[in-house]
Image 1 (cartoon, helix red, strand yellow):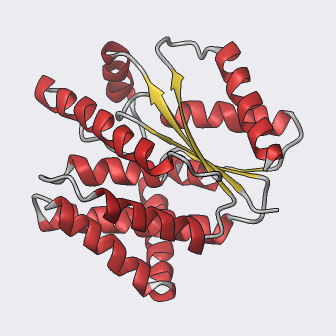
Image 2 (cartoon, helix red, strand yellow):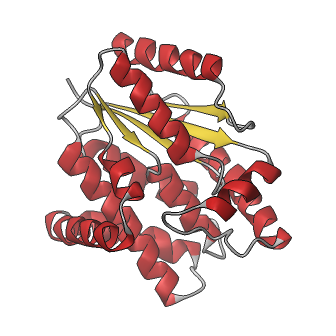
Length: 241
């Protein structure tokens, strides 16, 4: 049975990794096999994280040069402000593609605390232009087909600004474009989240093997009832396919 990919996207600091971990634990407790390699990489120390991602990126570049060109085309269409930012974006797209390619098929569910949707978010955030919808559709469609994704669930994690600021300040792993903490950057991030959601909604509309939903993470304690509803929805729709 093809792996069900569950990935999270949203404004940095909304709690994507936190919710992904709780979801993985709950699915595992219900007897499902769950791949959490992406979360493990996120939580790893910096050197190990960079080395792991680097090895996967090299592998993906060799395995799928056509995919590399599609990613570069999207980044170019976004008109990224600096060459360094463009390299980082390409690196991230390749890492996610490689991770899914390597891990998919080994479990019923694969959970990505940051997946293709978040890679697209970053492409918009660091770019100066929004790419054509057809270009986005083509890239994501190719990723879903080539990487053997059975069902693709995208979950936008939402949180209020005060909670996001608190999480950013206490972050121990990784980095965020909101680390500077200024109001202008925060407003830009929220605008990009709405823009990315609009594009993803248009892509997913009418697709039988893809869904998008929202999860409210607006309080410090996770809403267990909402998490249970999310799990029920994910398992029911996956079984139906």
